[in-house]
Amino acid sequence: MIWGNVTVGVTHTSVSSDRLPKAFDGFRIAVVSDLHNARFGKGNQPIIDLIRQEQPDLIAITGDLVDADRTDIDTAIDLVSALTQIAPCYYVTGNHEAAIGRLCSALEEELLRLHVTILHDQVVTIAKDGQSIQLAGLEDPAFAVRGGALQSVALKDALERMEIGDGYCVLLSHRPEAFSVYAEEKLDLVLSGHAHGGQFRLPLIGGLIAPNQGLFPEYDAGVYTRERTTMIVSRGIGSSIIPVRFNNRPEIVAVELLSAV
Image (cartoon, rainbow, N blue to C red):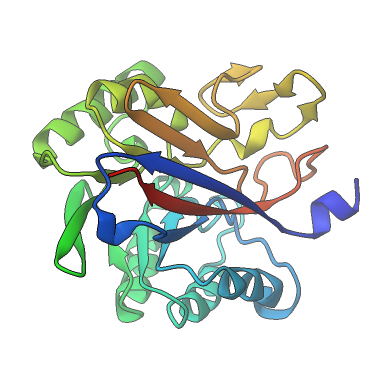
């Protein structure tokens, strides 16, 4: 149990689609989620080394870089500064960024200084060899509303306003509990976090509890598919309210896109 709390692993997964342009076959994305100010070694060097070994084409940071109860912007920025030397970094906020008020602006100013692309309900184009995919990012709904039911509505409204095109789209969103919304919008791939793997993982059952999902969460970790939409939920790196994980090692998720064209 100690080893599972003081080390970080890499979980590899691949996603195949006949909608993915051929130029993006083998495209690699490293997902960094829910750092919560965690430190693994000096300067989080083990995390940096693991991501460098994966040789990602893109690094997706899916929220909660900081923790609202013990906010430490320097830890987050030190890690991201190193990650920007590995691959282009794209970032969306989590609920903890929403909870820190003005400090969130200071965090984002530092991220922009490092040339991180911050996606506030925005979509950008990633081009390669004359072909392209869409990369969209949702602002965490806690910036707008507090009620759990209303947050899913806020996410749906934001997606509709973004006017995502018909091409292959990867969505970065902190919230896995809104999977039905993502599937309704026919997104191809969703990269998420927030659930912390259910914090305590039980054999044959899975996670015990997760924010906004309660006991025995449906979307705690791993890969979920509904029609053409695949969602990958990271167990995250750090912890928040409960400082101990059980059978739930912190992880970086390495995603490989495969073209079935």
